[in-house]
Amino acid sequence: MTIKKIGDIQKLSEDIKTEIRRFVVGYEDISNDLIITLLCGGHVLLEGIPGIAKTYLAKAFSGSLNLSMRRIQATPDLMPADIVGTRIYNPKTLEFEFRHGPIFSNLAVVDEISRAPPKTQSALLEAMQERQVTVDGFTLELKEPFMVIATKNPIEFEGTFPLPEAQLDRFLMRPLMTYPGKKEEVEILSRKNIEGDVMDVKPVAESSAILSAQKLMHDDVQVSDGILEYIAEIVRNTREHTKVMLGGSPRGSVALLYAAKGYAIITEGRSFVVPDDVKAVAFNVLNHRLIVRPDILIESPEVNEGWSYKILQEIIHEAIDQAVVPV
Amino acid sequence: MIDPVGLTTLLKPYLPILVFIISAILVTEVILLKTDIFSRRWHGSHVGWKSKQNKKVNRTLTWIILIYNSLGFTFKSSSTIREVISDIVPNLPSQSENLNFILHSLEDHIYGGSKIGRDDFIYHKKWVMFAKTHTKSR
Image (cartoon, rainbow over all chains, first blue to last red; front, top):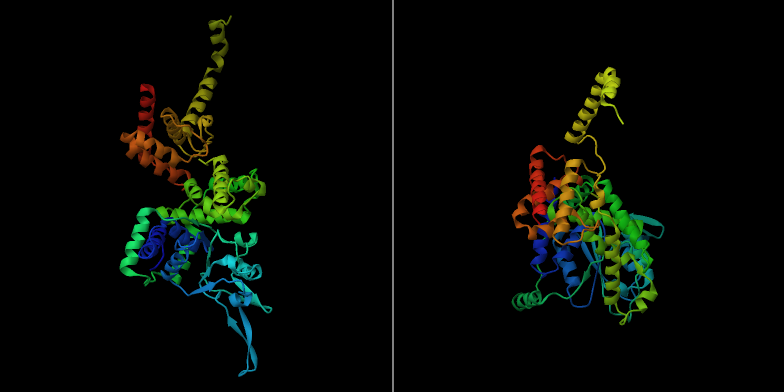
C-alpha cells in the first residue's frame, strides 16, 4: 500500500486493526495506542495483570506488520549482551565478529520487562532514544522503523526490578490494560473453543508504508500555536501539582504532541490537531512519567497499583481541567 | 446650558471635515466587520473561552456558551467546543445537523486554519438566530 495522503494512513491503520481483531477481542483503544506509537516512532509499555492478553496483543500487532520481529523474554539473569549482542572470537577467521542481538530488528517485544535487572534494562536506553547501540567502542545503527513493545505486570514483586525513571520516560505511552467485559470474555471463550490457540496473522503493512506514514504525519498534520501552548500548560500543571514529586518532562510534552497528531489521523483522518485529541491521549502519555509523593500513596487504605492508578488519573484529570482550551 | 444655535454656528465651518472623519470611522468599521483581515480579541471573552477569532466566529461561540448554560450545564474554560456541543445536541435535536456543521466549520477554521466561507456563515447565522429566540422563549 502506498501512503500519499492522510486518508491512506487512516486506511492502513484500519487494516492493522482489522487483522488484530481477528485474534484479540476488545482492547480497540490499546490497538489504537500501538498504531499511534508506531506512527510516532516511539515505544510502548503495556501494563496489566497476568492473563489479559498483553503478549498476545503484542504478537498480533507485530504479526500484522511485515517487519522483522524478535522477542526478548526478560529474566533476572538476562545480560545486556543478550539484548544488544556481543563480539565473539571466530577461530576460522582468527577475528572477533559481532553477533547481533535481538534489538537489531524492527520490532523488539520485551516480555515482562521488569524481570530484567536494571543494568540489562539500561541496555535499552540508548537503543530506545537514539536508535543505535554502542558495543565495545563501536556504534551501530538500528533498523528503521524501530519500536520496543514491552509488557509489565504491576502486581508481582518477587524476582522483579522497578523500571528506572529514565527508561519509563522513553516510552511514548503506557496503556493500562484491565479485565475485559463479560461480553468480550464470552467471545474469547467462544473463539478459543472453536479455533484454539492458532494465530496466523497476515502482514498488512510494509516497512516502506510505515516509514512514509511516519514522515507524512510529522510533516502534514498541522498544530496551531494555541494547541502547543495547551500541551505545555497541561504538562506544566502536572509539575506544579501538590501530590506530585516529579511531573512530566519536556520529552513528555513532545510525546503528547506526537501522540495527539497520531490520534487525529487514525480516529478521524484529520490533518490538524484539536484539543480533544490532546485530552484523549494525555493519560496514557503522561501516567508513567509522574511520581506521586510517597505520603499520598501511604494515605491509601490499600496500598496497591490500582490505588496509584486512581491517584494518577486524578492528577492528570486536574492538570487538564486547569488548562484553558485554546479557541 | 448648551446653546444649540450657538454650537451649530461654531461648528458650521468645520462641518465638511467632521463629516469626513465620521464617514472614515464608519467605513473602517464596516471593513473590519466584513473581513477577516484583522483578528480582534473577543469583547465577550468573560462569558467563556478566551477567543482570538473574528467577530462572526465569536458571536457563534458566545451563543454556544449561552445556550449551554441555559440548558443547566456549567461552562468551564477547560471544555472543548466538541464537548460543549455534544452536551447541547441531545437537548436540542432539531439543531443537531446545524450544530455538527458548525462544529466542523469552527474546528477547521480555529485549529486547521481554513477560512470560513460565505456559505458556511449561513449556518452560523441560523444558529445565532435560533439561539436568540430559544433563550428569549425560556
